[in-house]
Length: 429
Image 1 (cartoon, rainbow, N blue to C red):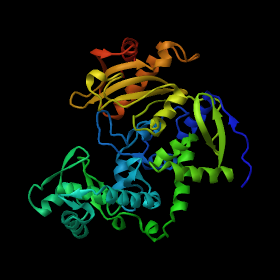
Image 2: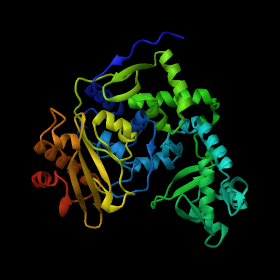
Image 3: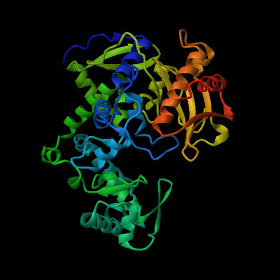
Image 4: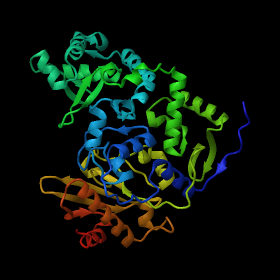
C-alpha cells in the first residue's frame, strides 16, 4: 500500500468552483441557434451518470431539469427517443431512486438489484399472504409480459381481467398487477421500454430492451462494478465525502469506503480538506478548480448538485429540504422550491408553478437564501442583481415550457418578491 499524502487544502470557494465544474454548472449556457437534443442529453448523462425520475410535474418533470440546467432550453423529445427507440441509450432501474441510466450502468447495478431481492425476502414482503416472489399474481404478470410486453400496469390488468384487488404499497393503493410489476422492476426482472404520454411506465424484460452489444458483453463482477460506479460518482461530484459517493447510487457505506481507499492508493482520488465541511473528503484527480464560476440556472430539488443535503449545507451554507410533503403551515420556503444558482452561490429560493392552462409561470414565493439575506456571505451579488438575473432565468424557463408570461401574484411571499416583480416587467419579450 502506498503512503497516503497529507490532504490538499481547498477553501470553501475553491471547493464550490471545483464541484460546479465537475457538474457542468460553472459556465453561462451559450445561446444556440439550434435547440439542443440527443447529443446534449448524452453529454449530461455521461457527466452525471444518471437522471433521477420523479412524476411531480409542478414545473417540469424532475429528470428534464438537470439537462436544462446545464444546456438551457432543449428538445425533451430526445429523452423519449433515448428511452423508447432501439438501440436505447437510457433504461430505467433503481439507482438514486428510480433513474434513467445508460444500459451498461444498468448491468453494473445488478448487485444492487440482487441485494434488493434479498432484502425483500428478509422482510417477508408478501402479496395477499404469500411471499411476493412466489405469489401467483406475480407469476401471472411475469407470463403476460413474456408473451405481450411491453405493457403498462393498466394494460396488464386489462389482460388479467377485472379491476384487480388493491394492495397497499408504499402508501399507494396499487392493483395486484401494479404491485407485481413494481416488485419485478425492483429486483431487475423487468425494466422499461419507454413511457406513455401520461408518463406510465411500459414494462418489458431487460433482454428485449438492452442493446445487443451490452447484452453480449460479459457481466462485471461486484467489485469491478462497484469500482466503476464509485469512480463515476467521484467524477460527477468533483469533491465529495464517502457519504456523497454512496448516496449517488444509494449503495452501502462500508463497501463504498473500501473502494475509496483503493482509489486513494492508486491516486485516482486525492484526499482534501475544506473548512466547514466535515471529512474525510476526496477530489477526483481530474477535477480542477476554475478561476471563477459564472453559471446561472434554476436547479431542480432532484439535481445531483443538491441531492446530498449535508454537502449542500457545507458548501453553500444552505439548509435545503424539499417541502412537498410538509403541511402547508409548516413550510419554510414553499411547496415546490428551486434553488437559484448565480456564479458560485445559491442566492435565492423560488417557489414556482407552471400554470399550463393560463400559459403563465407563477411565482408563489421568492426568497434570498439565509446567508445572502443576512449579508453574512461577503462579496455576494446585490438584491437588484439577483432579481435581474433571476427574472431573466424565469423568462427563459417559461419560454422553454411554452408559457407566455411570468407573474408574481398578490399573495406571493418572500423578501425577493418586490424587486423580482420590478425586474420581470422590463424583461417581457
